Image (cartoon, rainbow, N blue to C red; front, side, top):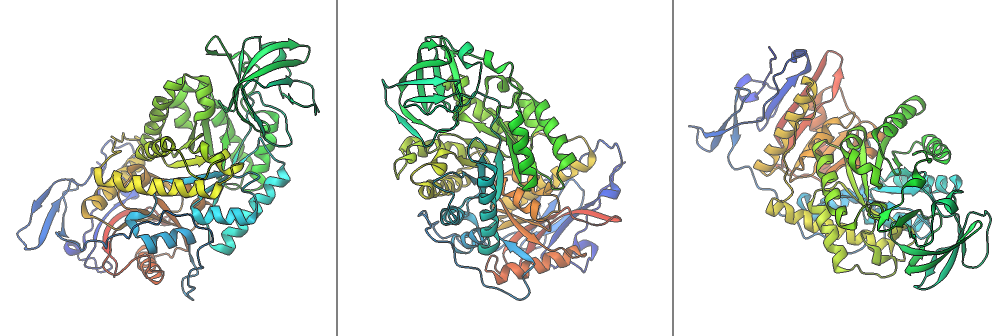
Amino acid sequence: MQSFRVSINEIAGCESLPSSALFVQTSRRNLAAGSTHSAPRLGSTCRSRSAGSITRRNAFEATAVVPTAPESPPKATEVHHGVFVESPPPLPSHDDDSDLEVDSVLAKELSENGFKSTRRTKIICTIGPTSSSPEMLQILAANGMNVARLNMCHGTHEWHRNIITTIRKLNRDKGYSVAIMVDTEGSEVHLQEIDQPVKVEAGDEYTLTVRSGVRQDRTIGVSYDAFIDDVQVGDMVVVDGGMVSLEVLDKAGPDVTCRVVDPGIILSRANLTFRRGGGIVRAHNAMLPIISSKDWLDIDFAISQEVDFIAVSFVKTADVINNLKSYLRARSSKPIEVVSKVESYDSVPNIPDIVAASDCVMVARGDLGAQIPLEDVPSVQKEIVVRCRQMGKPVIIASHLLQSMMEYPTPTRAEVADIADVVRQRADCLMLSGESAVGAYPDKAVGVLRAVATRIEEWCRQEKHGNIVLPQLTQAPDGRTSEELCASAATMANNLGARAIFVFTRRGYMANFLSRCRPDCPIFAFTDKQDVRTRLNMRWGVMPFRLDFGQDPETNVDRTFELLKRRNLVKPDDLVIVVSDVRYSDKSAIRSVQIRHVP
């Protein structure tokens, strides 16, 4: 029979813990192989005879004394919703805290705005011509950019390498922790390179051609040789998921004459979708592989640059994700997470399998809305967000979040409402595409995302919106115990009004489980691995720190308290929940949950 060990210092006389701690731990050595008994959640509460305390009896059949009225955390100051135009001042240096690394923007938000007002939803920015300078990259990072996306549809490897080098230099010099995502082009039909974005008006006529090297006025090349065979007179050619719509007027040899129906801006290497009779034309997809030969070259480039994430475009089945993961394991010494982009008609029926196979999922609403009815996009988005949360996979919402800010300095009210709905659904990340790549106000767009996300998160905590039932993820006793401990930690943090949850993790495993629970307080994830720290930038509510671990877990906790107090990130008597899954030796692999007051 599976056994659990509960150690509570008031009962067991454990002298290594402070008197304010409740300590629940399970040993992996005690988990019987094949056992079907799961670690239960903390259970009911009853009044103790001792004055001023509550006796909490849980399903472990152990009793702990917990103070009835822990000191309330100080009220958070009002979050500043303006746009930073300079990087935050460097943090004060301390001789003894060089082994603790924290993003300087996060540290500034925590110290100025308080734990409750610190943003949980992460921000991804696509880097392009208007955001590629070192100065603008620094502004975006200071405004709250967590992940920089490099779109391989545009630019050369050398251009992208320079961006990666600049971001990593900013991380080192300014104390940022910006992760890097490479987004593959995919095997869909694309326009060829054009010198600069083209603004088209309704009624304008343009020629699309399969000829290469075309430089004629109002003529744009198409990268797909069979384009002339697939398209018919009367078809609608949708550019970039609806940025521009063209009606096919005539076909002559390699050229297709079109008239602009919906005006907008045509970007270099924009993807094309064909519509006929109100439906999507899918014949041209049949002969195209999901990952093209160019994509494999871009993936090899991403491996050589040791990026954090690789996004795969137009994923239709889980097989392509599994194949790419095998390829990465064989060729990359650094773990790289795979992001599946759901943006095609064929991917919708396979959403459960795609989510299960992926490390992260992106809802690319622009292209998705060009392939399925527009009225279906919100329900598909909600389905993916809920399924990703249930399975503990980060989910990114992309496309047209702030489309008007491509040209204007303020968003429309409808765009703000859309962002608020995404945050209310508890998605992990919001992503800017053209708004930050070629838009006129990339810094202001990031500021809008930060302000709206922070305010709506606060409202959700007050009104208890966004709670869903989380199913069990694994049948293995080891994984089930981790799930239960994290669920208990999140419940305790919410019920006790904890300032934060501290998790000590080498792989990010428990931090991911905690993020899935969406607790009211932020999750401080301490890891000794830099690549784990940057990957945790994609997880909702996780504030990643890099910390050199010692061999004694209690010493690590006490040292962390001291280092954070020096940085004014915690204060004496703050209530925190401490979770650990760190294996300190082959003979001692213990997961634990503690209720601690900062000394």
